[in-house]
Image (cartoon, rainbow over all chains, first blue to last red; front, side, top):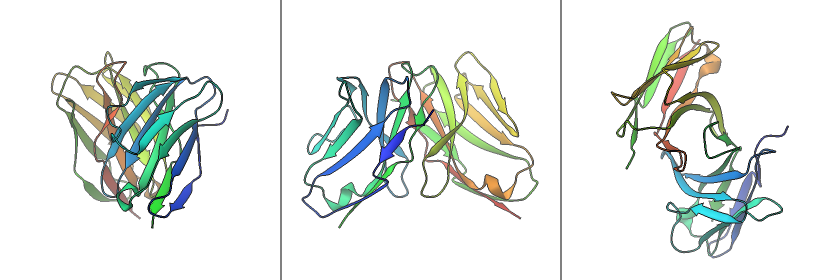
Length: 114
Length: 112
């Protein structure tokens, strides 16, 4: 049973380009959470999704960031017109239910904006 | 708004020592609490999950306790080893519908 799969592991984008980060949850998990970790900062919640629904996006920046979790396929975190301040590690976690069993995290995508 | 604090921010101990990492949270009405380990440049590995109705959980040399009334959890590591060197993160969930809120972690170095 593969864990939470994130790709790519490393992503380099020039300022103004788009970044797409993918997350495939563990088999049987229908809840996906995205977190961002800035250098020397803790993990900050961004968005919580279930299949085809955004449940909580209170941590998402209002502009340039969007997330989806379609019926088929992985969850996607999309950052448009990236800026240097978007450089961070982006982690995805999944859980089988709303959280009783805790989260399982992926290895993250490290985004570098040059 | 739930806030999680971890003290100390960094800790260096000789191999073999027993140690305690501390986590405090501002809202004692929690759903569960989870301890993670993060190695440099890597993802998070779940160590222990404590439900709000539980007082402690154990896994091998690790023991985590929870005291909701005082808003505290401790992670006890027995007989530390160099391989335990990592950042340890505490995260709290206030309800089944809310996301985990993380502390900034304790960076542990175990010296051989």
